[in-house]
Amino acid sequence: METLLTVLGQAQPSATHRPRSRPPVAATVAALWAVLQLGLALGHLAGLDVTPWAGTDPSVLSALSTSTVAVLVAALSGMSLAGLAAGHRRGRRSARVAGGMLLATGLVVALALADVRSLTLLGYLPMVLLHYIGVEPFAGQDMTIPAPVLLSLTHSVGGVALLLTGLAVFTGSRVRGSTASGKDREEAERRRIAALRVGHWAVGVAVAVPLVYASTRVAWALGIPLGVSDEFLVMLGDAKFAGLGLGLFGILGSLLTLGLVQRWGEVFWSWVPRIGGRAVPVSLAVVPALFVAMAVISAGISFAVIILGGEIDRLPGEPVDWGAWAPELLWVPWGLALGVAALAYRVRREGWDDAGPEKRAQRHTTK
Image (cartoon, rainbow, N blue to C red; front, side):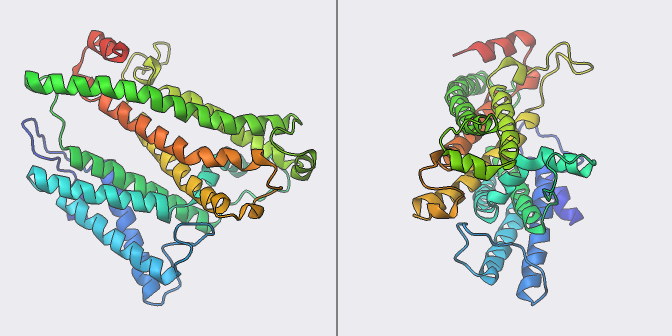
């Protein structure tokens, strides 16, 4: 394992290649996920009382048996380890193959093995944290986290780690602006301008959708039956205040998403103690955004399976209560837009550390 993590820390060769003393965090997390899940999968296939996947319905894998999914997980884990080990090899072709393998594996893990329970945990996380510090926001509500939910969250984390590592391997080491040729710098600048334009559109979608969802939940908490019947609102009872928490969480997410195209998402405000005026680490914006994007898409797929599959009666309320289910149909485009916005932000921030304040401002305002 130590040898594997060592080779993961080696970036793709370039004119500015510098060996790293430690492997990237994403590659380390991806390797740990792969080793853990490979052990669980092999243990399950050997007859032990362990499983790498706690099935839920609906899911894109719900038609498969747990043993079949265990074989799939073992294969995905093996592919992940192979891609991680191959990522340090010299040569552009080798890097592209390894990166493509990691990207494909990460998508399957984040969108298929993970499910709606990951997003559910994220939505209720503030209330869960309050519970663990002794504050009960909703009396009588069980705020403990079941093991299957944690397992789904593990797949979400592992999938995003594989995606980030695959992206880094596929694109190779960055050629910093200070040493790149004029042609390279011009090409990089064109990519940044295009990324800013695409990012604005993607952020617009990623901001609007959660606000649509939040509007219904906030209205319910205020006693307004937006998109639902009066009977549905009465049936919710105090649960409508849990929905309020989810709605407020969505509003906060929308505000943070704006940072992917705003100046304050690139440089900390000057009044912030100690870090004011410094560049925001790219990973601080990209990693959470990609994580939420994958969780939202996975959850959106689950809801689409129910609603488009003609099983809408499985959801609370009646089919006419569109406010309870229609916003969820927008989760897949929401997740896709958020993912695109995060990647556009990453492209736009390439070579950020080598640019002075004036150049940074020019990059941000160029349309």
